[in-house]
Amino acid sequence: MEKLKILLADDQSLFAQSLQIFLNNYAPDMTVLGIASNGKEACDFVTTNTPDIILMDVRMPVMDGVEAVKHIKSAKPSVKIIMLSTYDEDEFVRNAILAGASGYLLKDISPTELIISIRALNSGIIQISPSLAQKLIQNTYVENKSNTDENLSESLEWLKTLTKREREIFALIATGHDNDEIADTLGLAVQTVRNQVSTIYSKLDVKDRFEIIKLANKVG
Image 1 (cartoon, one colour):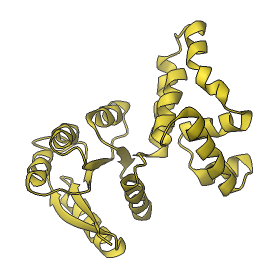
Image 2 (image 1 turned 30 degrees about the vertical axis):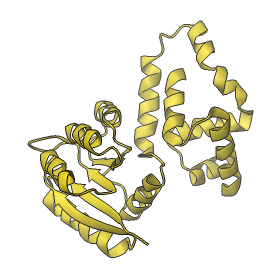
Image 3 (image 1 turned 120 degrees about the horizontal axis):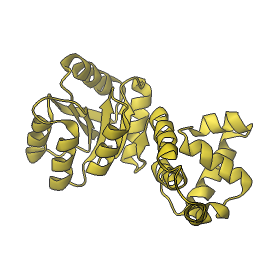
Image 4 (image 1 turned 90 degrees about the vertical axis):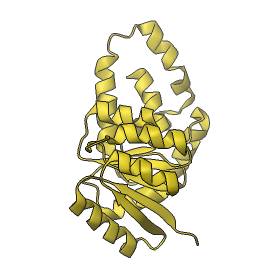
């Protein structure tokens, strides 16, 4: 099986080198092609190489991660990019996703979870740290408090297609819970949750959890 080609873009050399060693040693389906110490180096790298996935820091010298995402996605749209950062401010998250990033994870993620996230992203599932998802929903609620009842009613029309249980699961997804956590919270089997999540995706015509979050943003 062909290995996933990874580029690391981070100005913290010790972190990047440690991550390179871990991925190369413990993810047999991945290989790290190289390390870029800033956004410009990442852009230069993809002019002669085509990684499958880039793990990109947000704050770097010369060119920051968000600007690098714009350049790379413009030149090679097929390259998927996960922002991997210590910064959890809404502005960074939103700007990165709008620039074309396919995920935003915090650096406190465990190495094993990171490998799972990389594989999930390669399968087309947008990745975002649960704590960030919950924060985005909470902040959007504050921003949208001034919505009129009429506008809120219109935005809720799609939600009426869900059953009571599906709405409960929808809310938990939107606030960053994974399937195991949802199962624990609602006292359900994990497979039951998976089936319900698939039904929700089908009813709302969405592909992944990030689209659920965007729908939830509409209702605050």
